[in-house]
Image 1 (cartoon, protein in one colour):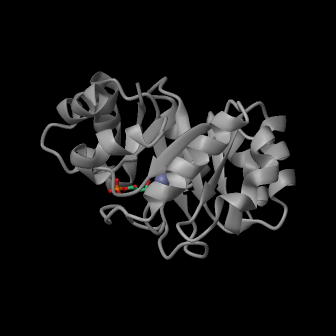
Image 2 (image 1 turned 90 degrees about the vertical axis):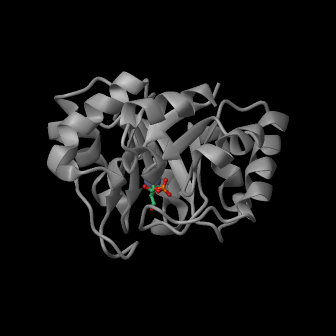
Length: 215
Ligand code: DX5
Ligand code: ZN
């Protein structure tokens, strides 16, 4: 069964605590936290102090997606804020291997994210070192965009590569996931679905998470 990681990017930040309780009741497996710096992506969100505060209200593991330039500068801060998985973009750092080692040195799971145009081969030599690959199925920066169809082939290709090499690397897919395409994306080999707007723009957040869990 695929795991669900609701992205709070589309939540009502004035009631963030309540909304997190609702996804918890729905059975969310992770909380997906989209950190944006206005440089790597054209949008700005929040950083370690906010994550640290939310850490006090829930025990759900934190899946922190860093869309920031040179994330190696802030790994320690995010590790200390209560992140469980820290994912960095392949395109955001020259020293990806070193950055992954840094994440692991703090006892955290390490993920690498790929923009839609970035090929899987860019991380081929690092697959042994990481816990998760996050395939972006929209251009990072905003919630509520449409799934890019060419990413089907990318997900299937990565699934085959991981299975052929018998690696324990999870595939997370982020962007444009709705109830009506979730089943298909899981069938292509996804382990974790990130869902933003389809959950938080719903009138029944708890019920919506439950519906995704049933997929
Ligand atoms: C986009 C973020 C996503 C976003 C997904 O840059 O990484 O996590 O919140 O939102 P939806 O599900 O609305 O596409
Ligand atoms: Zn994300």
